[in-house]
Length: 494
Ligand SMILES: *[C@@H]1O[C@H](CO)[C@@H](O)[C@H](O)[C@H]1NC(C)=O
Ligand SMILES: *[C@@H]1O[C@H](CO)[C@@H](O)[C@H](O)[C@H]1NC(C)=O
Ligand SMILES: *[C@@H]1O[C@H](CO)[C@@H](O)[C@H](O)[C@H]1NC(C)=O
Ligand SMILES: *[C@@H]1O[C@H](CO)[C@@H](O)[C@H](O)[C@H]1NC(C)=O
Ligand SMILES: *[C@@H]1O[C@H](CO)[C@@H](O)[C@H](O)[C@H]1NC(C)=O
Ligand SMILES: [Zn+2]
Image (cartoon, rainbow, N blue to C red; front, side, top):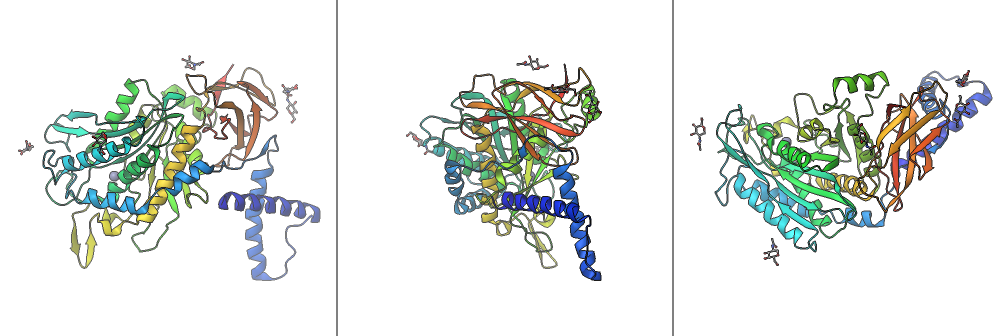
């Protein structure tokens, strides 16, 4: 609300200023040197804003973000920083959670951590009237790769709430419960992993607790996986299992290193979280990529639309956070559990804190020249982690309550015309009783986020009086309950 309103006011101001400037036939009447420069800089940005809002002109209303409803606000308020703290403290208490550590010791090692997470999840499922089921899919990762010296059992923990109306459509939130120190093969020494990634697991668990008593329309999964530090093994297994089960995964987020907002120089940035969203899909064939590039679609992959969606529904006064979408699959030199999902054609993205302190990641716990190294609980900000949890819950719930993202969307290229004909099919295998209709979204090609909405009603084909050459268009579904899906992006069609 806060940002939406600011943005709107700014747009109105820019629009007014632009009209004023046109009416006066001038951009600046100031005589004062310094003030003049300042004014010019401001006018430049206002003019750029005007360009965005005014060219090309086209149909529809200015884009405004969907706001959380009463039920969602209530759920967001239930996220408890004290519980986040208790979960992270408990996970750190297992000493090490190296994937190569003991699977059988009842108090130390990854096995003890796995069993504790699973028992907590079972406790949440007990409150769900049978809606939530807990599974612990397990497999042996054979010795061979550099980071797996011995055959190693890897176990994921999944809390699944079956969707009430569209059970095959799945949205998933995940964190990894394994940890590491400097030597990724060290299974013995303390490896607290408070930020990386007990923080992400705490979000999965806190969301599982809150969602256990709710009734999402599509299926939601809250997961904790292992083997991330050894090579994304748990997540790869999870993505492959879902693919083989024929699950229609329309959104996946990994929370990995979401526990601190403090940079290595001590500055704090507590109201921003980064969301890394891939451009050209790693799953697309060379010929599809060639088509995508030929139509300027490199910024409209399913992962980018998912990122835009999260920024829209989770940047507000109920989360008190700004979702900062980064147009990149992940940070340089790093990877994460969203990648196996992307590789299989599932839209996926990664939440990470705004600044990382590398002295607190993947490091032996030690003091060097008075500087504490190691991923210790004392460096975690539980209020910040709770807010990232709210971003996840706002995103997940808004996805699960909306109709599915439209599919097989095409934009007609059969004739040269100044208007644009779009055709699609609804985003679900079932007839969705909540589906109210669809909206065309558009923006100038140079804009990062949607700028206009055109409601088109309960149709699967529409013609917009706007040239497809000059804008990016998308289509999203609208629920009778007010929730809207992420946008789909059209490829050329008949
Ligand atoms: C869940 O409920 C069952 C049956 O009431 C009980 O046996 C079990 O201990 C409960 N589990 C947890 C983790 O609370
Ligand atoms: C694991 O592999 C290493 C290196 O091959 C070997 O030295 C070690 O004994 C093995 N550990 C177990 C528990 O089998
Ligand atoms: C959507 O497109 C795919 C691939 O072209 C096709 O296999 C599928 O049948 C289409 N689905 C519908 C509902 O038209
Ligand atoms: C498209 O519009 C331009 C002017 O905006 C006009 O010159 C042109 O003839 C139109 N093309 C068609 C196919 O109608
Ligand atoms: C679409 O564009 C063509 C040519 O520019 C025009 O003749 C036609 O009326 C437009 N409108 C519709 C709804 O197709
Ligand atoms: Zn991690």
